[in-house]
Length: 265
Image 1 (cartoon, rainbow, N blue to C red):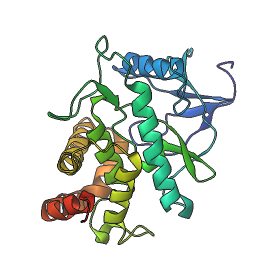
Image 2: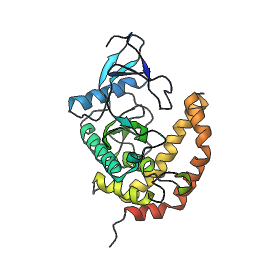
Image 3: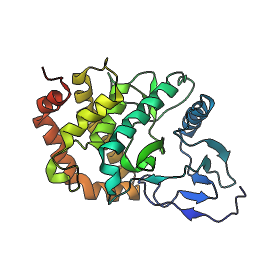
Image 4: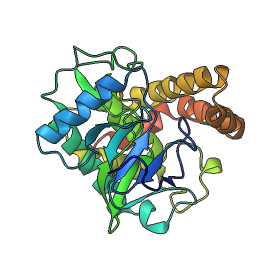
């Protein structure tokens, strides 16, 4: 695709707000200090036949990374009803498991990665780390691909699963849920984990990872705020009150979250 072809701005995103464009069947994005690691990850996924991620196609004349465009629809706010269904939630869990299976054979050691999850959740499995609603592409109401691997780094299954549950259930006070998921968080949490289907996972480890993931992600956001990134500055201003409420909700509901994942006799 010629570099002088028409560029169409792609809405959404925080870190690269206003900087991601579509050119024909490609997406052009700014590179980062850790882009080589991300590119190696995407190449591995392509090599093993995983179709749920963009392909890395090179670098254009402006120094931007060039990725394949994945047709479909991301769940951006205000969230469409189809994105909040159990069908959509199950498909996210299954896509996450397929991703973990595909990436399990990837050697991450030669590369410099973004900030890894904290111990004991850092490991050898390169996790997506930000499976937010707008980072999943859907077709016909089912998740088919993850995009935006900017935060991917060596983590663990429990960590990625907790991140997905925190965002998709979502795990927060009903005060901060204004859509059809209100009152459904615990049920959806259990459904996501059960659909993922790893019976070896320790429920306590997943629940602990939920709070740790919340703190980890917002520490990254605060770092970007201090650097003056306008997307993160705006996001933090809009979210700071909810972040505090969510932290307190986790602290007050640790046992409730654990009970949601504990089989009932």
